[in-house]
Length: 260
Ligand code: HXC
Figure 1 (tube, rainbow, N blue to C red):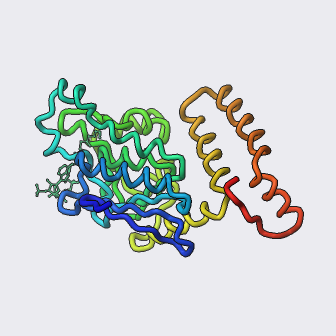
Figure 2: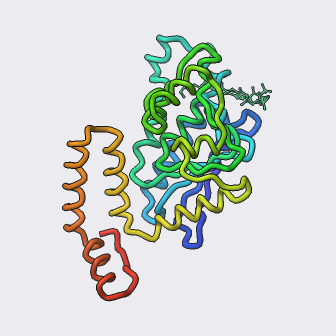
Figure 3: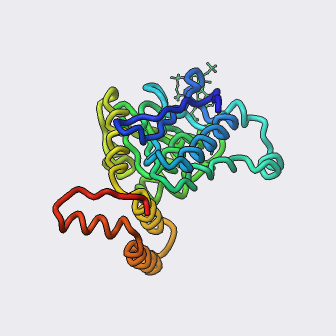
């Protein structure tokens, strides 16, 4: 499909990484409705494509995304939000079965920070800035900022970020566990693609199960999460790829996974 608000590409030495670049540079990649429709479509297509192992979402050096499009939502009303299901397209990213990695350079604010947190892993360039500045414009985060952020960084820091609207830089974000690694600006994308390629050396089937299991830690109690994990772990023993992985180890050769 021809996209207007994003660019897509297939990258990596094995051409198995789906790259999505948010592409409204003049508006600092503000997340307007059409952009999110396209992003959802691109994620769904890569998720359904057997040749793709993982997806990377990035922006440009100035901005990952500076939030929902304020000009677009300025005249929304409570009724129109309810009637039209404002933000419903955001579910597509969190519903993706394959790993989705955010490569954040520049601003990740409001909905931009929330989009990064919808992803499974966040890598950042050292000039990245994160924040939930909705409070400055008389509203609150609406796509996970008050829910996912405390799960990443704990209550006190999340409260500070949400109630002040202040930005935090990449190193602070790494220290508080929001970001898993920080790189020089110009290295960020290649390092993120390397991460995706590394994940892509494993069985796609088992990667999917592992992602689902980690997500349980965010969505349920410890007891039921541990139970889920045990069932999924037992379940891997019904797969060809588990058998191949262990056989290859014993035979001292690299595994050849088949996604079976
Ligand atoms: C629409 C935006 C925008 C946004 C920037 N622009 N952010 N347009 N929505 N969120 C536009 C500006 O209007 C301007 O276009 C152009 O991008 C460049 O922005 P400047 O402000 O001139 O750049 P700069 O001075 O470098 O300041 C950068 C900035 C600032 C600090 C990031 O742009 C800013 O504060 N943006 C808003 C951040 C924010 O409040 N985000 C939360 C949004 S609410 P023009 O054509 O006007 O010059 C939200 C709700 C989430 O995300 C709910 C769930 C999704």
